[in-house]
Length: 168
Image (cartoon, rainbow, N blue to C red; front, top):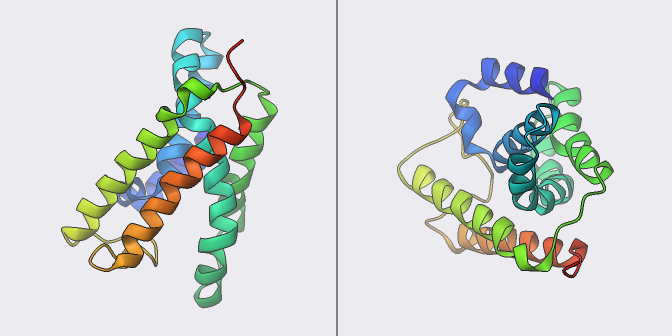
């Protein structure tokens, strides 16, 4: 994952930070790094923030973003697409680590913060490295932008609720 992230940073520079996928991928990298370094408490703190978003990124990308994006422009590097929009979810699921209902606010807050960032970024004229909107629906001057923001927050909450365990 680290190599894929470094490659993405070299390619996209600071523009890489405009994507929910990348925010979630960075959380996953931080989690797995903490786990590797045996910083268990930090890894445990990151876990509930990233589990549902990792699933939402994968499913949302393949259902909403990819069909529209690939219609106009096929991916330049399909390996990168699969790692950041699929294998990362598999890595998280394979952890077989629980999330709890009481933590539902964590992925919801994380997704709200991202969408506020994106609305401010796009509203201020920010675009991707290619000069386009980060996502085709990121039009916050129209209802579709806010509808998709609400859908993303709802998807993170519903996903967390669906996979969460009651308290031990």
